[in-house]
Image (cartoon, rainbow, N blue to C red; front, side):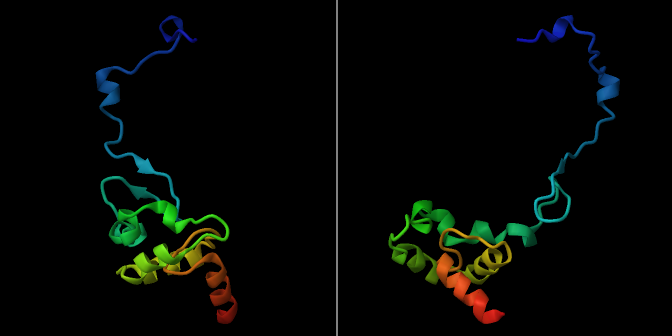
Length: 114
């Protein structure tokens, strides 16, 4: 274990720490740098309105050969189904039910679009 009290490290005084920025930047996950104080609804705000966020996530990631019926039923009544599907297609999601489609169905959709 390290003992920082015996090291030569100098800790900032109150005056020095007051110059620190008030807002910490968030690392870019989707191409831009965002600050914590200004959430961007356009980024992934749709996920908060998704019905799947209120249900069992295991239904959306069934084991190989498992039923997708329960997840697709939830998706059918979801108001952000289109945004979810767009996200999955743009980010090449390979697992789970996204926007009411399985990975196999999304692959078919992509092939037809090309």
